[in-house]
Length: 289
Ligand code: NAD
Image (cartoon, rainbow, N blue to C red; front, side, top):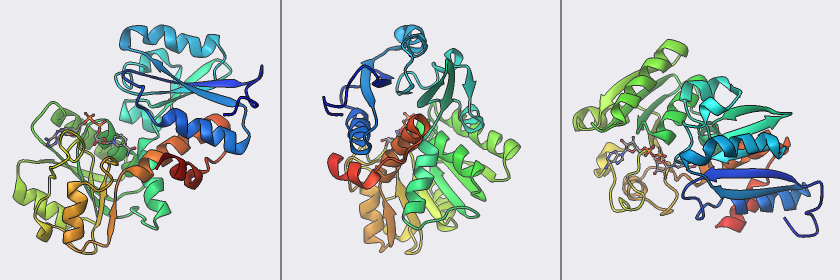
């Protein structure tokens, strides 16, 4: 926002996380406010778990419109909120808080952001099968939101680490509460992984593989695993071309996407919740990249 625009009526939105100084969200939202002439300001606050209760109380005290939350607060914040939207309740993590006259509601916009970014590219995953690697924050939001939004079948893979139990929980919840059929798989079973990718419409990677310090790695290394008409989606957006995307390009896959669209659209979804306005996504994209 420009100085011209800040005045006694400016409405504050926060970002509560730690570490957070590297975040692109303040630049994204403040440029969007300025472009649309909205009298809002977005500021990042270094908030660890111990500061969280007072920080959330401050949203009400200062009459802020809301806040984003990120690591390490996405799950810890839930007891301090008044309500969760139904998808967020299933996901069990929050990235956006909206303050409606003192009532704080938690949302997660990563899953809707991922689906919107694909819609924007003319890719409709509803009624289709997805094979998904990962069950951390991003993987859980994607799995639950896709199941709620009409994806027909999801094969969820995770390696044998602390996130495997989350993968199990996601599968159980999807089968219990949605019309989507979810199945649980181990990433270590390469033959199973290859077959599930081969029978899917979209393969989505929501693991940390491909991102620093694992930027030289991909869970799929053999181009013959990837059909040309498969949709390949990597949640990572730095580097812009991940190892998985290189393998997909080598395989001749026509529709290969990184996580940049998801990142912009999760921000746009939060922006819409706070302001009621559509973020000028193309304009913001040009500013950030
Ligand atoms: P997280 O720590 O919550 O989950 C990490 C996941 O990666 C787990 O499923 C874990 O089992 C898996 N994993 C980690 N190392 C692995 C390895 N060596 N082999 C196989 N699996 C491995 O992290 P997160 O917040 O869910 O982030 C996951 C990815 O999603 C990151 O690459 C992040 O950049 C990306 N992300 C993108 C967006 C976006 O808007 N595009 C938003 C959030 C996260």
